[in-house]
Image 1 (cartoon, rainbow, N blue to C red):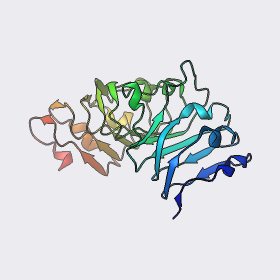
Image 2 (cartoon, helix red, strand yellow):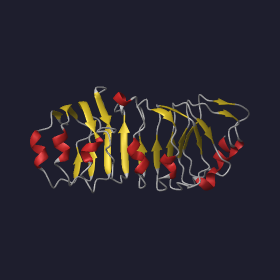
Image 3 (cartoon, one colour):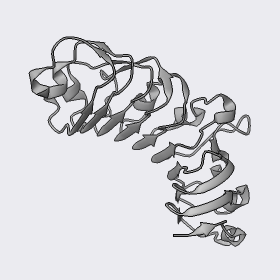
Image 4 (cartoon, helix red, strand yellow):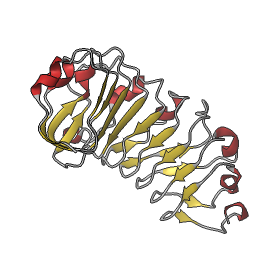
Length: 240
């Protein structure tokens, strides 16, 4: 396990494609020059370290092959920023975006990252534990039909999530919107819409009414959490 600060000479590795320093005890501030000079990068995982300061996703703006970014901070003094500089438009098409526990856009009133609106190839999106605010954006799902993992737990999203999708993310395996303020409508055709769903976490939202019996027809469902909602009626036999 490594500790201390990253050496500045790393920015000379101009052919570096994979940069994984996750699960260490690294500290200090990440400098823009570390990223902007490494334009061959395709994969970055800085998760589970103790960095401080602010990191901007705009530093990847010249990385034409970049597809994977992961930040899961072990330090509450670290922030990932996606909205600066003003006017920046992300032209990347990412496949994996993991921005968990990283005070995402904390100094921008915890807004949902706008660059996600232009993503169409995502297969994993994790923005959990960030206190993000606003209405749930259904384009997370509509724009990315290859999505397999959508993890948005422990934020402050409101609005409505319906599992009756016009453009079905049929490969979705994990859906976690726990710890929000959302109303979730589970459609009767959920086994057809999400045939590969194995993990469904709706813990602590604003869901009332009956528990849909169609959930019991999800053939590969391995984990289900509906606790701390306002359900009424009986538990469907298929879930017993």
